[in-house]
Image (cartoon, rainbow over all chains, first blue to last red; front, side, top):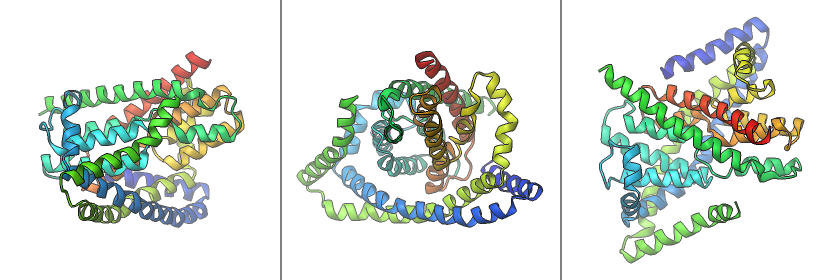
Length: 194
Length: 176
């Protein structure tokens, strides 16, 4: 599916540009965005190295397993496929915690690590049930305090920059719960089909 | 509110402290393990690179050609009939696709309509309450080499739709 979507985005854009005379803009954007993507990936190195290093120490010291054990009752309900005390649980938990507190750049390495552990559990290169649940949780955003938005509001002299925290938390809560429900519906549908 | 900000700033240093103290107590060779784990990070960043270049370039073609705007125009009537204010629709559509573009739009909306206007508050809530589905999908599945994503994209995008509608309803109820 990703192949079709990817090709479709590019093809639709190019055809549209040819018809509407925006080929020049596309040409420019093509190389600028490729460069932007490389900068983004290189920028990820520092946080990936730092967090994966620290998390390796945490894993060796048994801290991840300890965290996994404490929160197992909740997480096990959301991820029934993952065996108890498996390090994947610890990484999932760390990712969720980092997300909740708006530490996006700590959340990404832990999320990738969690995916890696889940891939080991399922084997193969198809997304497993728990992987999709985990992805759904992450895409719905779990952030309690939207720090970036607050700082933009401050820049524009908002009378109350943090006024939107309440509505954001409420919207986040609804979208996360819906993500879990939608995920379940799709899972049972795919199982039903065989 | 203040408490959560406080936790956010203290969380990482405290976590580091606990990890290092416990690891040293348990005689884990901390520095060596840190380096060992960190090496994975370098590999991961480079393996991610082609995924990000591919995805970001395709999105930029779609945006710069004007096709994305045309698409937004096309489906706007449906969203307006659901009660979504027309000013917010481009942001709602772009939020799952491109994080930087969405942040730019949020800034622009807050700048144009004012942070304390209805649109400003709605844009703020929308920006904060969902994440860039396509980016997360690319990074998480790309890094570990998942080729078949199954129903993942559908779930992510449907959840975004619910999040967008929820933002509109909540902001209308509370600030409207």
